[in-house]
Amino acid sequence: MLHSAGRFVGHDQIDVLLSQAGQAGFRGHEEHVTVLFSDLRGFTSVSEKLEPEVLIEVLNRYLAHMTHCIEHFGGRVDKFIGDAVMAVFSLPTTRADDADRAVAAALYMEAELERFNRTLPEGVARLAAGVGLHTGRVVAGLIGSPRKRSYTVIGDAVNTASRLEGMTKHLGAPTIISGDVQDGLQQPDRWLLVPLGRFRPKGRRGAVEVLQLRGERDGSAWSRAVDREIAVATEALARFQAGHFKDARERYDGLARAGSEDDGASAYVRLAAHAAAYEAAQPGSAWDGTIELTEK
Amino acid sequence: MLHSAGRFVGHDQIDVLLSQAGQAGFRGHEEHVTVLFSDLRGFTSVSEKLEPEVLIEVLNRYLAHMTHCIEHFGGRVDKFIGDAVMAVFSLPTTRADDADRAVAAALYMEAELERFNRTLPEGVARLAAGVGLHTGRVVAGLIGSPRKRSYTVIGDAVNTASRLEGMTKHLGAPTIISGDVQDGLQQPDRWLLVPLGRFRPKGRRGAVEVLQLRGERDGSAWSRAVDREIAVATEALARFQAGHFKDARERYDGLARAGSEDDGASAYVRLAAHAAAYEAAQPGSAWDGTIELTEK
Image 1 (cartoon, rainbow over the protein chains, first blue to last red):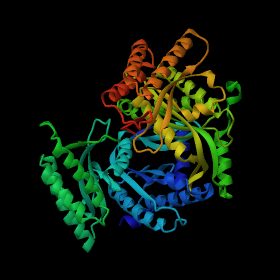
Image 2: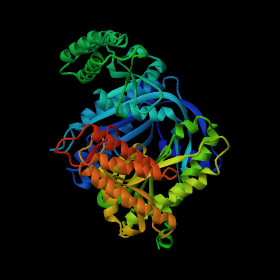
Image 3: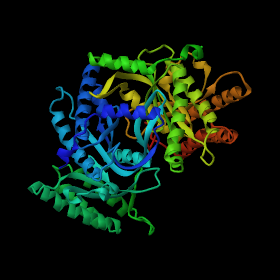
Image 4: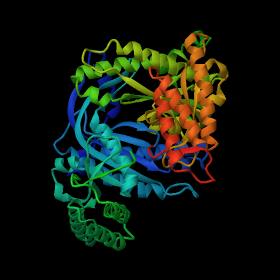
């Protein structure tokens, strides 16, 4: 469904139109959107091995692939920041199924990156990405100086999406979404989501629920296996949040061992380590189940 | 001198020309530049108090001011990321005095922000910025997807400049430059620079020398006072790096007390705390004087 409806033509024309509107006093407006941040891991060290022309060629090819994934599901590439991509689902027009579209795009990006990796010049390490999604209120408008203005969004929801992307490194989970994205899904049962817990990034007031996006629930043997994993992870998290750290740790350890060949394993290793840390140093009675991160 | 030579006209035309060149196969090329990142502190909480239209108006006015400061000294605004500004000194053409221009622009930005703050709507808290400058090798080129491409720079030097901006929060110093910027200055004696030490941001291989930019050395009583402060801070840092933590802490404490009304004080408070921490838990004999940061 999303596939057929998603193709979005003429972003460049929209930019032109919006910037003309801006000359005539285009105003800031509030919107509820899903923001996607993606970033390549270790691209800087890859980039140091390539000639400048090859580097730009590889990066542009990668960005074109990611843009295709985003636009295919009706998202809008807001900006590139080096190898990072910021996208919004969706502006200038929001849609009821924006969260589902953003999730579908994130999965498509993962698959496309796999394909892209096979086309890399010899000697270049495979690229790995981190993707973070968050849904919330933003202010959209034409932002910039009089001569360099573009239609973009600002607000805490943008910062949170960026921080979620940063948390993928810490959590060992390549693609994570916030609880607010989950709440906005029109087809919540369509997606394989592993609850990882509540985290408060360093220096932030609010905590955020984090789920790992593992794929689409398609009835395959793999999908059913992930479902069983989700059931164990959900139980492990409940134990953790209830203060039964030893029990939680053992369940996470089991998941980590079972999933060794799988991209889920490294998240469970991290969660087992968190449980072990709380096991060793019990939090006070006021603890609300939130893991305080020491990194941004 | 920089004032008269710095005015830079027609960035938008350059963009157009470069993107036409891109159609014809514009290639990536290596450059040695100074990268500036600036970011507003707490703008998100300010933004939650303003109506969307007012927010966009205030932000655009701020960005126009900062752009003016950058272009006045021949820099090029690379992009806006919300309220953050990334600028490069200077492309497409580098200049021998790029580092001096970037430093001059950073000081102008500080002064302009002061003026800008006086024009804010009632009830809006004064804005404070963090600015980080780093000089190094970048790859410049037209980067993006086929339909959304802009002339920009990538590379470790860009990441380092961004991390320096992030370190301004930790260090309590609104404007910091790296040792590589200092090394590139044509008029090193023109600027009041306080050495803060060597820092390794979390998750980075390399450590970076950090200096706080305090102003222009102009022979005034204030400038002479900062010079005396720099002498004490330089000595405190030497003691710190030689492992004389108590001595260093006492000197930093003295600077913090003396400079209470001054923007230098909060950096000395942080450095005194670092010295106290090392005093309490002495580093091993292999310690090279670098402070490991636990935040990015």
